Structure formats: structure tokens, C-alpha cells
Length: 634
Image (cartoon, rainbow, N blue to C red):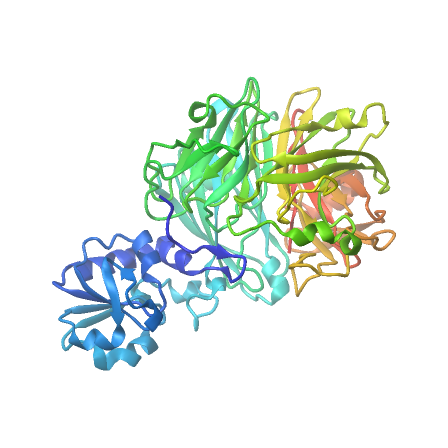
């Protein structure tokens, strides 16, 4: 069963209520509240804002003897709340309740409005008993301000299996650019069973400084045994963004273990997609990380082949804040790459990661949110005269002498029954060199296109691909165009997966929030991307793409600035990327050894362009492996 909680709406934005009730530090207060109410013979509920269904999902209220439920909005009268039909709050005076639960935070004013209706002698309690400490609030005046709950969960492990696996999270204090003066991260590490292993706070330095959390250092710091679980992150004192963005590197004691992934997206969703079935000789493990303080029940999460109704349910219970490794091939033994899998997540988990395990090699990547609120948009097929290419999903072609590049379109909306698409190959100067119409791909149709096959004998060492809509044969689209991109080292067999969705790029017109903008209203026509640099002996790779829905500036004016971890600027380089083209670079070839030495450990770079919107991919390179994923902006 899916949790009946509101997490995120593309209309209203993020919901702070489920984070406030599900926060680890809220649980002791909620437990005391339930125990106090359970001791009363009769309890009334007053729910002026509709919070009680979320409370009931994230907190066990079964011990409480509710004798009545009351609401403020007359249109809510008759709704079932805590097993009782809702009555108007004006009827509360006739209740025989010995306690009243006011289901609200910042409840003093609400209680004052109905104080005269409270039965004589009844104790009045509210959700304020479960408030976080004031020191953790960004906006103390409005408790459910989303900025008070800038939280996220991150896959985190440090073990000794197969030579050792470690994780390293890097993020920046990008909130300082929005006026945040004093920012910190509160962290709690959980093992696979949901047991808290460590708790601490990292104070962030002023300016766009960075913080790195390395699992080996955390393990040494707290004297921990090997673990595999997750860290709960809470950013304090933030501004501008209520989402914690980060880059997560998975590495091993062996140089053959290397992956990187984007942030986990902090809003649990009903569905995720883009999970690949295992290729020959591989196992695919889905890491199910419980985002809540209640168990995921048996059959709370299930998998099905994309476009097919049969569901394979996960039978095991996952404890609160616990982590479970699910072998996809065991649940769906008849599927194989390029088959795609849909995750029925029931709002129990944030965007999950999956691990592909082959002979001597592993890699980790993430799936994406599958939208449930989209419908086909008939106007998209009519916008070509205004928006040119329209929605573009760009991705790099890695140097072909060393790497294979593959593209797999992925349905990413529950109502997306077909996908009219085409694939373009573009050289670094922005010239199209090959195009393939993919037709109207059915939901259950899984294909993977080899870039080598599209190019044939064309000599193109590198460049990029663009997945766009193609309405030449008709069809419908919803603007949520996604794909998985897979890269394979021809010599070592190491691989990397990355996936993302399309946007409109570099056009002065606006359609339904596109082109997106990190600051201000659309259109988003500037770039600020974060590039973490790998520690020695790893080198850092970056591929910047200048996609353009309509013709834009002939070349970009792109600066890549090297910074010390405290934000001090060390050096910069400039790139002029042709409109529609791309450029790639490696940090060690771009910045001199002396500059990198001055930048020191923990150095990072910022890709900045005020003239156009770029899309970027980053990765690390060792002697035997590489990683790749898209960059985050701020």
C-alpha cells in the first residue's frame, strides 16, 4: 500500500509536513504525545489544516481512543479522520473528551480560537511537542517553512567486501549565494537495520565553500565496524534552496571500483523508472532505502517490466530508516537488458540507486521519478515554428576509440503510452552528422541504440547526442522526455550509467516553465555548475554541452574557475563553445600542477556562463575505471 502523504507537487512545490513528522528528532516527542493521549479514556481530534492523515501514516495512533474528530472547513465535514466522521469544530463543546489533540504546529493561535469550545478539564495538546530544537530552524516564526526542512538521504557504505567499497559525498555551501550567513549540516548515520550508528554536525564555512564526507573517515572517527546504510542530512540556516544537492562517489580499495551519482531527490514518489534489467553475466541490485520512521511492510514496494501489469512484490519488511539490497533478477528472472523495469515505490523511498555487479566490476547509478500527474500535451507537436528543436535531452559521446556509447529512451510518466522520438548525433562544432527516427516507441518497447552503429564509417572521435521529439509520424508527448545513457570501456569492460530528462534550452520564449531557471523566473539563460575534483590519483573529466532549441549566441562565454575548498579562487580558464556544440576537458590538462597544488585537497571548480544555459556531465578516471553522471547547478 502506498503511503497517503503529500511529498511534492509541481503546482504547490515541496511539502514540509511529512518531513516535520518523519524527522528522526521528531520521533521522541511524537512517542511521548501518543503515550500521553493513550492514557486518556476519550480523546478528540481537531484538524484545521488536514494534517491528521499524514500523522496517522507516519505515527501509530491505534492506541488512542478517539471519540470525535472536528474540522474548521465546512466542506470537510463528513470526512473520515482517525476512524471518525468529521464534525464542525463548533460541536466540540458537546464532546465528553478528556483530551484534545490539535493537529497543527505553531498551534497557540489555533488553540486560542477554539479555547471556549474545549470541554471543561480536557487537556489540550498539539504537534508542537514534536518540534525540532530552535537551533535547527532557519525560520523560527513559521515552523513548516520548507527551508526549515532542507533534508535529504544519501546511500552510504564502508565495507571490506571484494576489496572494499567506500563512499564520498561532496557538496557546496551554495546557500551562501542566496544570503545565508551561518549554515551547518546535522547528520545521522544508519546501518542497514535502521540502527543509528553516529550523529554529528558539520559547520559550513562562509562563501561557496565545500564539505566532503568520506565513509572511511566517518568510520575511523566513530570507531565503526563495516556498514551499509544511509545518512540523514539536515541543512540548517539555508536560503534560496530547500534541497540538499551533492555528488556521491563510490570507490574501492581496488581501482576497478568507481561510480558517481547525483543527489537522491528528497521527495518520496509513487513510481520510479529507468531501472535496467541485467545484461548477460550481470546482477542488478536495487538499494531500497526507507525514508521514514515506520517500516516498509511486506509488498510495500514492487517491480514490474515496463508496460506490463504483472508485479513482483518485495516480500521482506524494511525497518525504519533501514536499507535492503534487492536482487532484481531474482524477482524478475525472465528480463534481460535492454528490458526496463518500473518501481512501485509507494512513497516509501527517495530516488533509489541501483548497483550493477559483473565479474570483478561494479557500478552504481540512480533511477528517476516517474510522474503521475502528466497528460499528453497536444500543443507540443505544434510548437516547432516557435521553439525549433523544443525539448532536448543532451548527453556526451565519450572518446570513441576507448568507449562505447549507448542510448536507451525510458518512459517516465505513468500515462506515457508512446514516445515519438528521434536521436541526433552532433559534432563538437554543433553540426549534425547523423539522425535516426525511432518512430512511436510503445511503452513496453525497450531498445538500446549503439552510437557506433548510427555513425557507421563517419570519423567522429567525440561529440554529443540529442534525444528530441519527432512528430513526423504523429503521436503524443508530455514534455517529460527521458533516457538512460550507458558507456562501456572497450578495454577494461568497466561501465557507467547516467539518466536524465529533457528541457528547452536557450530560447527567449517560455512554455510551461521552460527553459528552467535556478534563480528567478524562466527562461533560464545562464549557467552555474558545480564540479568536484577527484582526490589523487583520480583525474576529473567534464563534458559541457551547449544545446539550443532555437539559434542563440554563436559561441558561449564559459569560465571554469578553480577554487580551494574554502571558496578562494585560484585560477580560471575560458571556453568558447559553438552554439549547439560541446567541449570536454580533464582537470589535470586544464589547470597546471602548480595551480592544482595551491588549490589543495578538496578543490572544486565552478562552470559559469551568463550568456547561455549549458548542460554538463562529470566523472572521475582511474587507471582501470571511470565514472560519469550529470552535474548539479545552483
